[in-house]
Image (cartoon, rainbow, N blue to C red; front, side, top):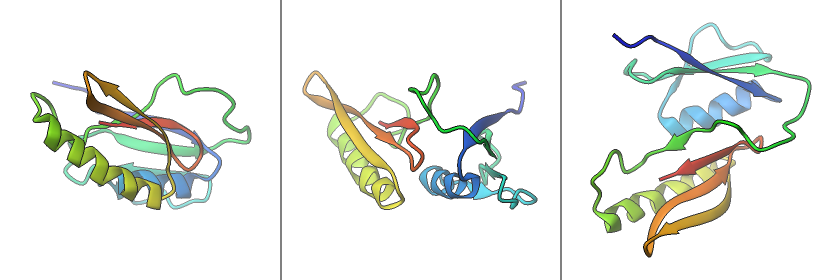
Length: 127
C-alpha cells in the first residue's frame, strides 16, 4: 500500500499560490488552512497528494530542483495531434491564472511540453 504524502512548497504568498495550483490541477482548498502564512490544497477524489504552501521570508533565487508536470494528455501511448491540442488548450488558461510561458520543447517535430513559470517564478511543465 502506498503512503499518503504532501508536497511542501515555500511561498511568498501562500494563499495566492494555492489558488493558482488548485485551478491548475483541479484541486480544492483544504479546510483549516486559511491563515495568510499557510495554505493547503487537496485532490477532491483523494487520489493525488496534498500540496502545502508555507510563507518564507526569502525570495526564490535559483532553478527548482523539483517541479510539477501537468499531464493534460494523461499517460501514453498518445495520438500526437490530440496531445498537442490538449496542451495548447491548457496553456492559455494557466497564463490567465498568472503563469508565464518560457518555451516550447519539441521532439521529432511534435510538441513535447511547454515550460512555464507559476506566479512566483517556479518552473513547471505542461505536457
